Image 1 (spheres, rainbow, N blue to C red):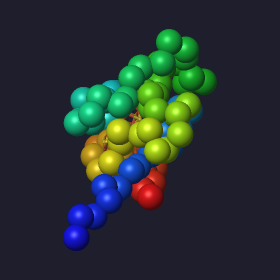
Image 2 (image 1 turned 90 degrees about the horizontal axis):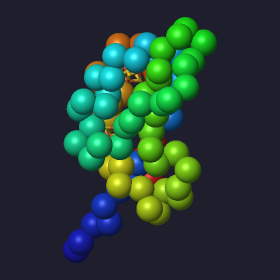
Image 3 (image 1 turned 60 degrees about the vertical axis):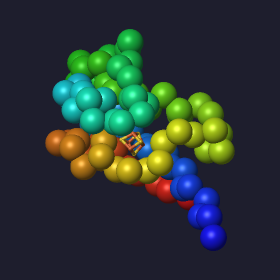
Length: 80
Ligand code: SF4
Ligand code: SF4
């Protein structure tokens, strides 16, 4: 029986982000970009590009690579 592929999403706390972009470098689907604005620490935080679209349209599979590499624990991963 075919199983439905899971969809995921991440919550990225821009104020915890120190702009190392490790998350961006490891996302296999290129779903993380860099914000134009500065956070309160003075870094351009990483941003999750699917933030504004419904989960049914998400490419993110919730693989969690981005969260695992983040040294500042700024990313939480959810799957449904
Ligand atoms: S890995 Fe963490 S600290 Fe580095 S850019 Fe991504 S969210 Fe920011
Ligand atoms: S959970 Fe995986 S697919 Fe989703 S944004 Fe993070 S690295 Fe990319």
